[in-house]
Image (cartoon, rainbow, N blue to C red; front, side, top):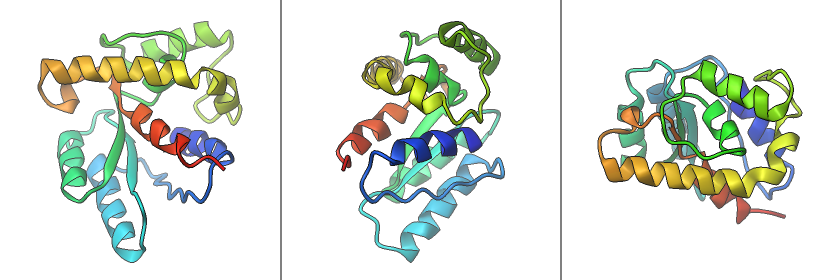
Length: 170
């Protein structure tokens, strides 16, 4: 989506050769994975990642499992990418819907949140390590409880992608 595209394009400025292929039409997770599979077939990539939210999509788990079968990694957020943003400020692993995440994020930011704000990456960048630690801890707790990723709310695996991207710094 647009939020993720802006975030990762701002992050890419610190990276070596990383290609971002955005899906900006609110495609469901399975379509995003299918597009990634086709992209992977067309070109020789070292790694392929899909970034998507659960939102209200019913194919969330299917997309994650299909990606794994095709050696594609997923940086998913349940319920929304704003979970990742809020984890830059505090740890949580309980359910927060998008509205609550945004409200708490605005409190932390001290300003009105706009999901297409080009400045958000710069604001959050210095807190990246905190977000990675918080997201990893919450993800591990959800995995230990079992179930499917669609039941792990609030949870994100964006930290796995960010950890990987750290290795690609110029």
